[in-house]
Image 1: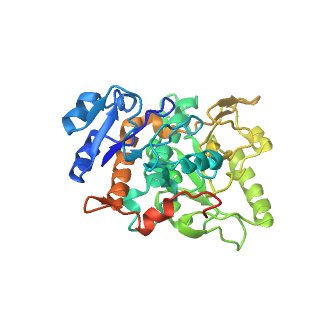
Image 2 (image 1 turned 90 degrees about the vertical axis):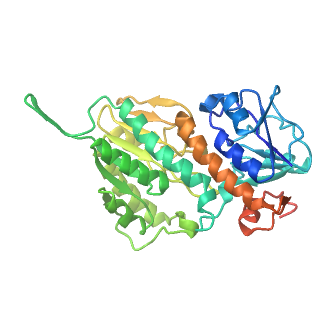
Amino acid sequence: MKISSIIDSKEKRVAITPETVKKYIKLGLEVMLPKGFGTSAGFDDDEYKAAGAEIKKTQIIKDADFYVCVKPNLTSKIDIKSGSHLIAMLSPFKNEAALTKIIKAGVNAYALERIPRTTRAQSMDVLSSQSSIVGYRAVIEAIFAYNKIAPLMMTAAGTVRPARVLILGAGVAGLQAIATAKRIGAVVSAFDVRSAAKEQVESLGATFVSVDSDESGDGSGGYAKEMSDDYKKRQAEKLAQSIAASDIVITTAQIPGKSAPILITKKMVESMPRGSVIVDIATETGGNCELSKQDEIVKTKNDVTIIGDSNLAAKVAYDSSQLFARNVYNFVSLMMKDGKLDTSDEIVQATIIKTKKDS
């Protein structure tokens, strides 16, 4: 059986690295890759060849059995054979029509976002590995755009106060953002609807922003659930106070299968100090800020910069590819039993995309 990938000009990360090429070969698979496949992530063809991959002078290998990708461009026709297996982050909530066409063409599709957040599936959890990198990079982007110093500085000429950073959402990305902002020397606070997040936030040295309510936002699988209208009203009032006092706000809140909740309104943005920065990493699903735009930088009248980069992990493509490729290899190895394909494992079953007719 053969495994390959698809080059996408919009995505710098890759799902196969020279390290995982060797692992796939040990698994009994032939690795065939398009020429220049890993260049955008910092891997050249010679590295892949040395690991045992075959490099083809084509943009797509049409006779592979497996195609592992990061985020394939589903707006273009994916010319792969019927009966093959496409394994990637497919955003089924967003790409239902495109995925239906792929499945009707006989391709088996597996959405890596659906890997359950269980102990056994941790080594395959692409959302966690990539979110951790995104949380780190969001802080770097914010500090770069912020025209003031982040840490406390005491000099003979006077004292410079530290930046006040607010993290909205304390999942994997949020916790990494907290840790990164603390390392830079900022004063950090964080908000999350999940009561379980308070201890994690405080363990990293940040202040937890809590809403006066008995309602808990703890959902299944470690995710947040959608809150009641009463809670949302209380939440908005609390966040308005915190946002007005913040120099940098990083938003990470998302709800699986739904649009991201709006946490920052236009009025809240207008209340922020001049020169403040918002990094909204949820723009792919609508965004947490009312004014943010996917993959654009918005400048407001009161000089607030809103960064809507939906693919921050691609800005550190080498390391994010290494982690992603290991996650994917662990997933594929679960599908191979004694050199034969077996999709019966419950983790694999959870990722299979079906048409509405089949579900």
